[in-house]
Length: 161
Image (cartoon, rainbow, N blue to C red):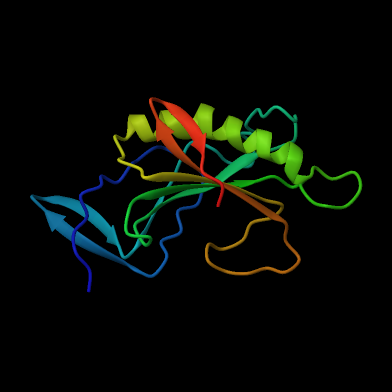
């Protein structure tokens, strides 16, 4: 059973993929289309493979997509990034360095995005993956790092999952 959500769907011009999970329904509201996605909203953001985001480590990072997830019972905004140089092998960027990049991405991109679209986010999740992976799918060969934050007075406060 689905019910309308009180969260607005954020919109931006983008090349980033929007991947609605668990299906979507299109509702007409006063001659305006409103996409309601069960549990997870996918939201495109300004970024594509040619628009790398600056991070403290200097590694190449780009935004894959943003998901507005109501599944945990509150709004979690998930920013999914591709960072092809992360990993545990020698010469790769490990978690210790990538965690600084994730905090930086939360502070510089997520805080602004959440404020711009007036989202009432309980948590912001920043994830880095060394390759594109469909949300909710496993890929044993992929490296993924995740961090969760709560936003407090325009600051990212680490929540430690």
